[in-house]
Length: 220
Image (tube, rainbow, N blue to C red; front, side):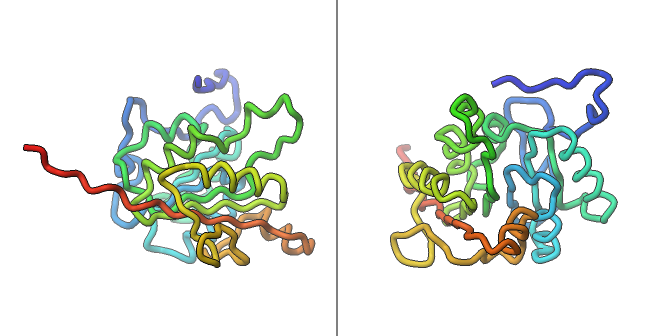
């Protein structure tokens, strides 16, 4: 998967990105202290701002594939005095998460209303899939959470099927053995979630948890 390089005249060519290299340490992206949380597809950044307000102890990174919004949101975070603990980076999460290190370093992943493409020819653009889930499972701490929500029932069923098939992730919803959640427990909402709730539409919420890794035995 190749990285898009904007033209020299692109108005948002300065959008921030991960540093170069095969491995990028999260502490090099956001130095400091506090647990890491990652939002995939933050768009205009509403959830990042609300989550930072609700949890001043966390470090937040958003991976946004659109140059414009990654650049604008990152600058707004800086202007709001949040630049030391929240960033919005221009990246395709499917490939860029593979470069993040170390393993077991992220407490929570968020995907709010992903994959807004409906035609068959757009299937290859869907962010959810085995490649993304492998990276999420690798980066999550033991017991770390993956939270996904959508207002499309068919997509919720597809996501649930894909995530349930991953051997390192287990359902962590309201009822034992289920991934379904009635409410959003994270004290922050994306702009789309606010809009859907105002319109009285249902939101399908899924939560999964990273299984405890097998202990590594010393063979020496």
